Amino acid sequence: MDKLIIGSHVSYKTDEGLIGSVKEAISYGETTFMFYTGAPQNTNRSPIDKDKTKKAIELMKENNIDLKNVVVHAPYIINPANYNNRDFCISFLKQEIKRVEEFGVTKLVLHPGSHVGAGIEEGIKNIISVLNETLDASTNVDVCLETMAGKGSELGTSFEQLKQIIDGVKYNDKLKVCLDTCHISDAGYDLNDFDQVLNEFDNIIGLQKLACIHVNDSKNIKGSHKDRHENIGLGTIGFSNLLNVIYNEKLVNIPKILETPYVTDIDTNKRAYPPFKFEINMIKEKKMNYDLVEDVRNYYN
Image (cartoon, one colour):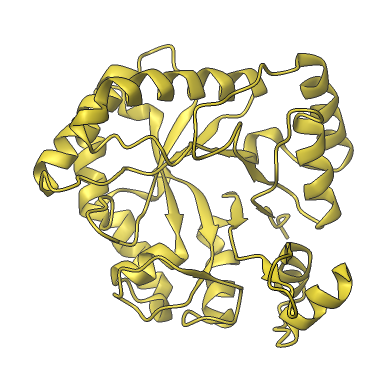
C-alpha cells in the first residue's frame, strides 16, 4: 500500500526557520506539511537561513517526509483579481515564488482572489494578466490555484473558472490546482459523490493538474458560499466522505493538508490548541472520534 501523504498547516517562525515547522509536523505524525513563509496578512519577510533549511531537509529525510510533497501557501493579501492591486500582486508574488524556490519547495498555493465589484469576467482577466506577468520559462514552482467557496466576490468557485484562467496563461505548465473540500462543498459540489466530482474535475481541467488537496470539514451546508472550516467529521461533509477523498485511489500521490480550526479553551476561550495530531490519528485508523474536541483540550491542559 502506498504511504499516506497527509499533514497540516504548521507554523514558521524566524528564529527556528524551517526546522521548527518540520518538528511540529513530526509531532503530529505527519508525512507532509504546509506553511507560510511569513505572516499571511502582511509583507514582512525575514531572510531565509540556508543552514537551518539544510538541517530541516535532513530532518525531513530522517522522518520520511518528501520535500516534493511539502506545500507553501501564498499570503492572503495577494489578490490577483483586483486590478487596483496589480503591480503589488506581481511584485509580491514574484518575491514569494523566489522564497519558495530557496526552500526547495515546488508547490505554492494561491487564492485566485476577489473581483471586488469589477465582475467575474473582468476579475478572471485580471488574474490571467497577473499570472502572465509573474510566470516565465524559468519559474521552478507550481502555482496551485485554490478552489474557493464563493464568499463575497471570490473567483475560482467552479472548475470552469479555473480552467478559463489556466487556458489564458502562457506558461500554464507552471499552473496546478489545490482542491479544498470545504470550499468545493460550500461552492455547491456534492461530496456525497466524490467520484462524480473528481470525474467532473478530470473532464474540465484534467487530473494531471491536481497537485494538492486541503482536507477540511465545513460548518455550513452545500452551496452556502460561506467558507467556514470545521474539524474532521464534525461538519456537514462528514468523516466517511472525507475518508473517500483522502483514500481515493486516483489521489494516492497527492499531498493532503488539514486546515481545520484550533480547539479553544472551554473556560476562557482565549487559548487554542491544534487538533491535527488527533485528526490524523483518526484518519490513519479510519475511525471517527466524537470526543475529538475534549481529547484535544485534555491533551494540552
